[in-house]
Image 1 (cartoon, rainbow, N blue to C red):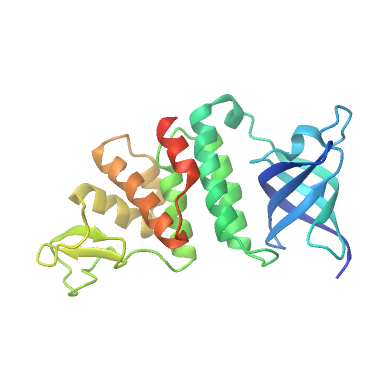
Image 2: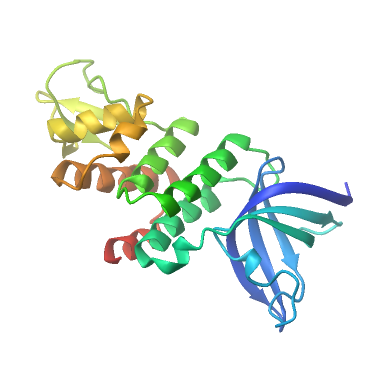
Length: 240
């Protein structure tokens, strides 16, 4: 169906097209992931300019033609999150989140929950010093997609006690008797249970420690297992 439409969107990716244009990948509130052409945005006199950079939260008007790419016709800024470009570590965190959304979101398939999570995550990364924002986002996406690990029971024998390991391949924690997967400290397990139990705020307030590092690494492993691919931004985040 052709014609103009409006939506709210977060810019996921941007790459050059020709001498003056850019192709944008947008996570929209009502239309899922959309790819569009922003014409002339690389010219110095462009009306859009830096407003269409990745991480920016926008209200957009697009024209849907007969091809795969829509055309961006109007842009109004909701938030540009300037702190993300002033801080390498914050930008690395935001990039990890955007990469995951780019892989999870389906073209033109509405996913308002994922859009809302993404918009809120950009705000959180921009405003919070928590080093677990990315881990928390990954765990929420896993839950949204139905891939959250079981964390209250041994996935092999059903025991609810002595949960000392977690098996990414088997989808959850394992007990001392089964002992399959990677060792998981009591403290890291408690954080994982809080995050998946609706108390992510308490997890984000944690200071850096060995258990929080365990959770950070584990969340990336779980996400990569779901996506069946390595996250390029994970390496950048580790170096930031």
